Length: 256
Image 1 (spheres, rainbow, N blue to C red):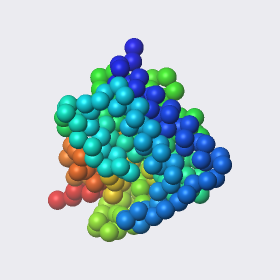
Image 2: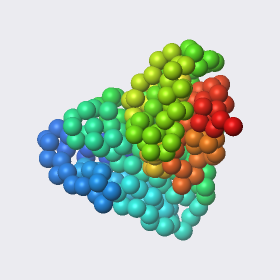
Image 3: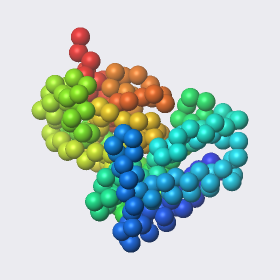
Image 4: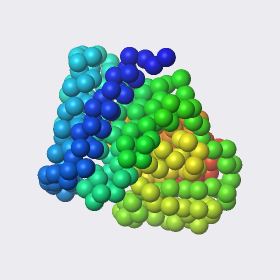
């Protein structure tokens, strides 16, 4: 039985999907650059508005933190964290690996996550204590116990260089069985469903990873920042693993 929170989050994701796929099909994206030089499309802004409106209709006292419209304070302990299109650059270039991220935080704890990749036909969702699901089917992380047999995914390498973490990711890649730079949310879909074993990112924002943090944890994995600290609204790096590998993966970035 889904909670009211999850039912509304799934409705919001579907409403966003309708907008996002419509613009993807007709090509009328209206791309602009934000102050940080990252792109935003009409679909990003309209989808986030649709998500907020859907949630607010059911929970008018809840707050919001979104990539496109920022913070809206609520009067309850609940805050929804939204990325209407994670991987907008893929979306613009007609690469079908993009998705909507919706998470719910109570006080400072993430308790719900929905990650919807419509063109991949992958809808992942989870609530704290209730397990993780892909298209309605339970999922869990892998049981790979050695990095020598593991597959690792990683985010943009330039961020590892800028944060003086390149040696760590280079050495880790060299000891793992396979590595791929899928980037963005999709790496975590693969991790939560046991298709890869480790994900490392040197630069993220909370709306990038809030939803998948809940999903990976509920699938049996472990998620921290790159120093091993718990996820907060200020988290700006990430290591997610099947749990078994977590301490070893952390050691590559925190030697001494």
